Length: 56
Image (tube, rainbow, N blue to C red; front, side):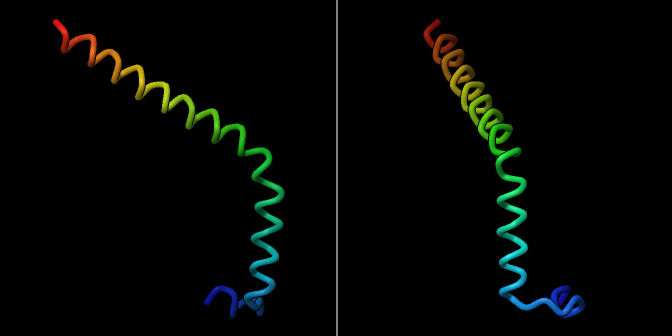
């Protein structure tokens, strides 16, 4: 619907999406990786602390 307003076809939309991905992913990728690894670390830490508490 929005594409019809601007007169863009599916090929043009795909090209725009690819350009946006190429421009923004290199700057966002390190932030995404960092947040994912911090989340995984927090989950592992909470699991290990729960294991330590359950042994008592």
